[in-house]
Length: 193
Image: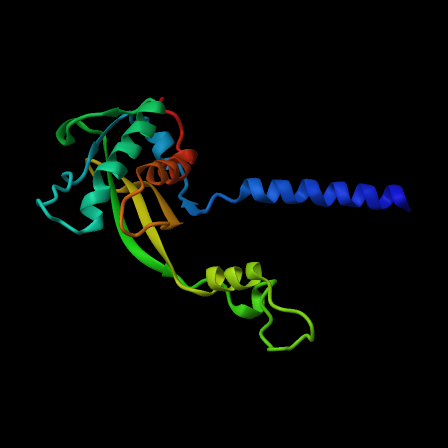
């Protein structure tokens, strides 16, 4: 009996470690890479020009554009694709960015929040439960990004990926977080032929 409990505990511990390792903080929905792989294309260009912010621009997309483009270009270079002018490119890369909101968890689905108020004599609510209730209960700002690859001659869609991630600080662009999420989004791309 003791060995069975020990084995069960080890299995649960191992499973929880794998679950934590799988959590990336980003939702990634990649498209099928067959069309891009079959095309044999290696040269890409940007479909749209880089955004140029004005002197006092407060628009986050204008501030994030250089980080998004740099992260995409870095990963594409690692995979063996070559950035060329738009006229010489075999396929074009573009992205669509939007802000979103994640409503958080419902109180009834959270493990430490009881939807039915109760009183326990001689016990006060611990600070961790209160902090978790605040953290899980409110709306969270998300950043959503769709990266698309289009054939330069026909404008047919070759590949796309949708990436959604929580924004930690809405007042500034976290270049490291942008780079990490884009690397995760482009992780299913095949290497250039």
